[in-house]
Amino acid sequence: MYKRILIATDGSELSEKGLLKGLELARDLNAEVDIVTVSEPWAVGMYDAMGWSVGYTNSPEYKADREETAQKVLAPAKAACEAQGLRATTVHVLDRYAADGIIDTATERSSDLIVMTSHGRRGVTRVLLGSQTAEVLARSSVPVLVIR
Image: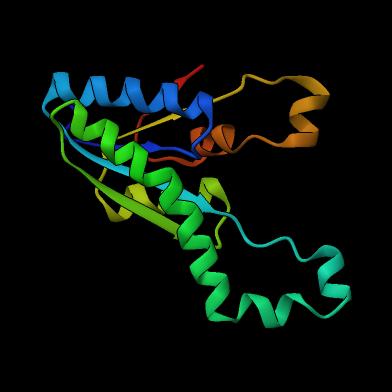
């Protein structure tokens, strides 16, 4: 059925549930696993007006900080995968919005299923906060399993 599963995580408690369900499915299907986390572009806002963003986002420290934060998400996810007797490749996508990074990684890794979570927000809350899950659902060329 599914041979390569991409599991998206941001390290939150909710995404942990998605990770575990995705790993369970991968184990049952004997599928390969890729785990992705996406570091969204640094919010420039006020910092840009003060002239800090250009210098910081071009500095080696910026990339190192983002990579360190991503590894705090990916390392435990990979450990959970190995605890299930599976091997995973971890992917950190830098400076992309989550939906873009997830869809691009699924394409690059030839994934045939994306597993991710959703808060299930509706109405004004969804409009104000946005929904990267909804965007992945709308734009993905492969099936998306959403865990709530």
